Length: 142
Length: 436
Image (cartoon, rainbow over all chains, first blue to last red; front, side, top):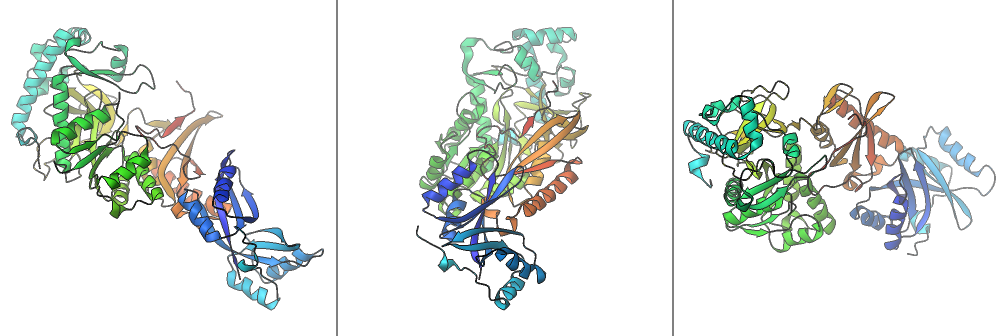
């Protein structure tokens, strides 16, 4: 029900994002969605990409601090209030969302989020009949 | 194995008698050949005849790094230039470099001291030994090199730089021993990991590590990652170079080649000699050196002389690991801080590489300390994928630092590979206070 996301530790220094993107390019990995959580001194670059396991291995062996996390990717209704409705369902069930971001997949809005309450989240998704995007739905043309 | 049992296992009385004779000789020699020492002795109303036994050494004046700099380049050289066959220079980052000239006899004694060290580590004729100290003005490379040749092992003069090539040679040539700085050993281990060279593909069994202070934790990590036994090798160019002292198989203190280098421990403030077991500044007098002898040279290294006998059978005294430098010591908000204390904490955190940098500054008349550490790719995982989790890691580290240092430090976590790796002496401090 979850998909794999890479989290990459990047220092706030010009050239460090370029360096990591260069490695991803060299490994023929395609980035599908990304976001950066930034702090004063560093950022966490989070990406949904093709072949996340291989991507993680290659980045790690090049000396990059990278980790794989499991995140939910839920399709939103394509109308005002789409995100509010989904977040509302989780909030009502007492589930905290650590972070979220969104991307478009073939015109559909997809909300990516991370929670530590995985089992509860799965319950909400089942009960509410939400559509979780699986790895196989992501474009994997490397 | 013991290279020279006659000297390394001498009875204490015989050793002190030999040291006394040699001290008298070296004082007489510098009195007649180095105006600097002659003037100093004359000022104190001392003549070489006043120095008869090793106990008389306390009458003599100290020599400091500043004296060496002030007499740049050859002011303290005792031998005529025609007798000098090699010249080394120490790093001159804070002024004139220190120039040290060696006579043929000096080089021969140095080689023997190095051979004693290597033999204590277990190096023999069958070994292939890579010297990975810098070859050049620095005494590490050539000093270790001569000793390996004297022992009869095959020396691979790898020097520093081109670490990937070196890592492959260690595997391909079946190199069994290596001499380098401990931080370079860790860098080499990292490089091997990156190249996919595993511990069972290499034959390293002995490491001679020196030229910078290191801790037991660092020893454990190097031994584990490279699959060898790591021994301390101590030295300084002002006295000779590597092999002033060396560890034996006990790995408990380094035996000093005290028939050539007489050690004393003094209180760095009062300059009074301290008894065995007490930590203070290490002072050396060269007893046999011809090129540039030094009398009571203050090394600025802090350590103690270990009391008691060593089970290995050697009778020459042992010094403890270096616990700091009188000049490395930082005074931050009135508290003495040694970089080695920070290192001991860094090494307890599996999330961080064994590298660190202390950045000291003064903001609004208040000293600040920031400790930079580097994430280790193999210990970075999903539990660290939020700023909150990283902040939590920072705070755990900061709490441990506070308990060891007794002052608060700001922590900065950096990306892998961003803290400079040293290939010679590593620097761990950036002091921006400009107090001097």
